[in-house]
Length: 325
Image (cartoon, rainbow, N blue to C red; front, top):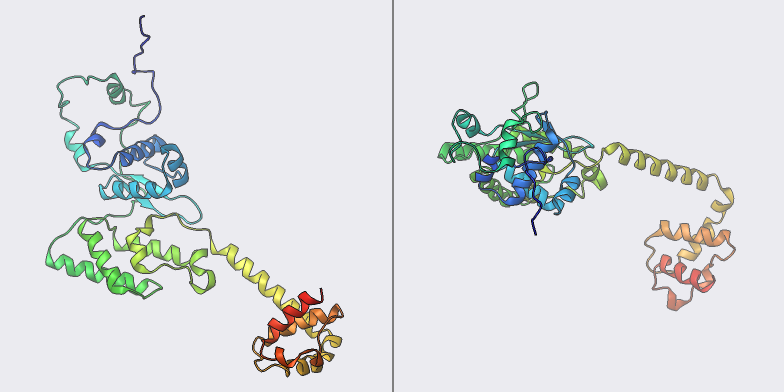
C-alpha cells in the first residue's frame, strides 16, 4: 500500500527552532522555550507571555520554565525585565556568533537537506530572523563571567551594596557564598538590574504584608534567582484592605463606647474577673462576656467555683458558652 506523504516547505507554520540553537549547550526544554519566545515576538524584538502560559504550551511546570529562562539568560539569548502587576518582558538578544556566520555558506555544503529548515531561511516574511536588541529602550545589561582577583573584590563590593539594600539581614555569609557561586558561573545580572528588581519587590503586596513577615532571606532570594519571578500584585489592594479593617475596628470601638448600658456592666465583669488567679487576655474575655450578657447568659462572680479559678477567664467563658448554649 502506497503511503501518503507531504512536503514540509510551505505546509508547516508555527514555532521553528533556529539552526544555531541546536549547537548551544542548553537543555532541550530551554531550546523549546527559546522557540516559543521567538514565535511570540514575531516581527518585534520582545514578548511578554506569562510563565503559566509557557508551562502549559511546553507541558511542564512553572518551576521548569524559570529554570529554562535562567539557562537562556546565562547564554545571553534573552534579557528579562520585570513589570509591575503583569507578566515579565523577554527581550531577544542577537547571539554574538550569528553576525560572524551571516556571510558564510552552510557548513553542510549548499542547500540544507531539510526543506523545513530551508523554508525558515528563505521565507523571512513568514519566519522572521532572530530579533536584534532593542534600540529605543536597552534591555538590562548582563555580567560576563570574571576570574581576576580585582574582579572578585568588585563582585564582593556589589554584594555588600545589595545586602545593604535588602530588607532582611539574616544569613549574610551564606548569601555571600551563593552570590560568588552565581558570579563564577556568569549567572548574575548587573547590580542595577538586581537593585531595580529588589525595589519593585520591596513595594509589592506580599513583602509589605504583616510588616515584612513573608520577605525571604537574601540567601534564598539569590539561590532561587527570584529576580526572574513575576511580580506579585500591587500593594494598593493590601492598603485598601487594611484601611477597611482599621475603619471597622474604629467603628466597633465607637459603638462600644457609645453603649452606656454595656459600660454599666463593667463592675460586674471586674468582680467576675477577680475570681481568677490569672487575668490575662482581659480584652477578649470582656468581648465574650459582653456577648453573653446581651444574650442574658453572662456568668457572675458567684458562678466561678474554686476549682475553676485556675483557668483563664477566656477559657472559662468558652466552656460556659458551650454548657449554656
